[in-house]
Structures are given as C-alpha cells and as structure tokens.
Image 1 (tube, rainbow, N blue to C red):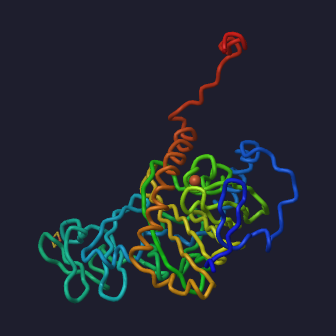
Image 2 (spheres, protein in one colour):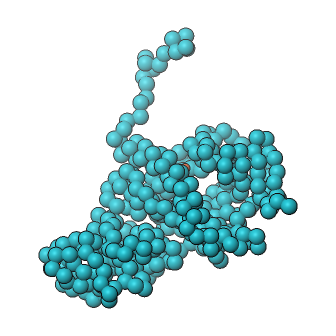
Image 3 (cartoon, rainbow, N blue to C red):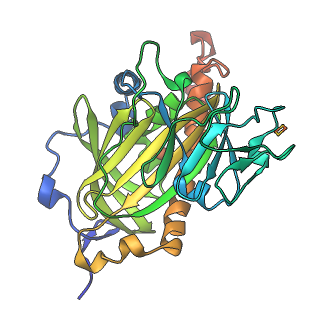
Length: 345
Ligand code: FES
Ligand SMILES: [Fe+2]
C-alpha cells in the first residue's frame, strides 16, 4: 500500500490528498496570470499590510544560528550595529560597540557566565547597563529571535512587549534560511503578495498555480509543489500579513494542513534587506509522526529548496526596488519608435 494516495493529472503525478475534496473546485473562469497579477491589486494588498503595527519588532535570525555559533554574531538592523550571542539559556542582543572605546563586541567571545567579553581590553557585558550601553529587548519564539528597536516603529506607534506571532502547528520540523537582497522590506512582502509569478518564475518548484480565494486580509492559491520533476503535491495555501514586515503562508487543504512558511523582511539599511524565512513542516498523519524529529538532513533539504526559491525571488525584489527608486527607467517607446508590423518581423 502506498503511504499516500497517488493520482495522475495530465503530465503530473500527484501524491497525497486532493485539496479539491475539501475546498471544492474554483468556480470563476480564470484570467491569464499576467492579467490577474494587476500591479494596483498588489499595491493595495501591500498598503494594507504596511499599515499594520509591528510594535517595533523585527526578526534577527534563527535562534539556532545564534545558539550554535559559539561566539557573538554581528547584525545590522535599521542601520544599528548589533551583537547577538547565546548566554547559555537565551539569546542576548545589544549594541555592537563596547562602552569603553567602541570595539566591536561581535569580535569578542562569550565567557562562562554568558557575558560577551570585549576583544580590546576585556570588559565583560551581560544583563546590566554600562554607560550608554544596555542589552536590547529580544524575543525568542522558539524558532526565530526578534529584536525591538525604536527605529522599527512607525511615527506614533507604541512599542509592544512581544512581536505579533502567527499561529504555528502543534509540532513541526523547522528549517530557516537567511539571505540578503538589495531592496526594501516592502519589495519582499510585495513579492509574496504576487503569487501569480510562482509557476512562471519558479518552474522547478511549482506547477499549475491558481488563485482560488481573496479577501481584504488574505489570498489563497491552489498550487502543485514539485517534489521532483513531474511528481508533486497539490495544496491550497493561504497568505496573510500579520505585521508590516512579515507574510505567512499556511497550508489549508491537501497534505500537511497547518504547515506554515513565515517570510520576514528586516531592514538592514536603505536598499538592503535581510530575508529570514522559517518553514514549519507538519503532518497530522500517524505515518509522518517522525517528521518533527527528522533532524539535520531533512532540515538541510528544506533549506536547500527555500534557498533556491530565494535566489530567484531576490532578483525579483531587486528589480522592483530598482524600478520603484527610479534607478532603472522603464523603456517606453515613442509612437515613432514602434516598428510597423512588417518591420518587426
Ligand atoms: S574597548 Fe572594550 S574594553 Fe576597551
Ligand atoms: Fe517567488
């Protein structure tokens, strides 16, 4: 007996539950993707997301990346140089400048007390403020570490004690990728608010993507995720933005319902953004109970797929940023420059 149902659909071999059994078939006739991907429609979704509060929080990195580094790590968030380290129990985040003479603390080490030790003259810093230096508010959500900065708040927006945290499955295999793109955070969110590019721009990963539902807060797609070549799984996936710099995809029908992919865009400095994407894979099938414990190899496979998609999408985001900031002018021909049909052949 196969572990999953298998069905043939055109040239595709689809494993797992058919999402149409739960959600039904789309009823409205579909326009071509390039018509549906209306820039005004995407901008309106982005404007709604951008107006949401963040409480001053942004994702720094995978908690595992800081914990396993065995040394302080350097980050830049909204132009602020930060050092992050594991103190033995939790992630600490602080300005990356020693209060004595300004050495970079991320070039130091962590002592047995969990303090970061300055590389220049050995000042040990931890929970206590020292001169103008003090640890920042950080939050470990179990997979990702967030940092709170006043520079991340919109004018008039209040700081909150914790970030806006999306719902997660009850147990999961987590895989996080972190990459950088030469763009603004809004380009990353806008990229995910344009699902119509999926099967065209990432043919190695997606096939037959259709938008099957849309409201003010979310957009739902039915898409075949390619496992290998013609073999894939068809799922319904809902995208929503819990805060202005995050977009979350949740599988709502098909195989792996409740699994999420959280994409977080953290400003580094103008024109540079960190993309931190956490895949939390879940299956309610008893045969898949091993999944959350699958460990390093499965994590690396998921990370490799996510990184490949972000190789593509970083180029998409960088292009939209260039167009938006007028570094690249769209080529629009005058009437006189448009060749007659016979000339164009
Ligand atoms: S610069 Fe850090 S102890 Fe002197
Ligand atoms: Fe994409």
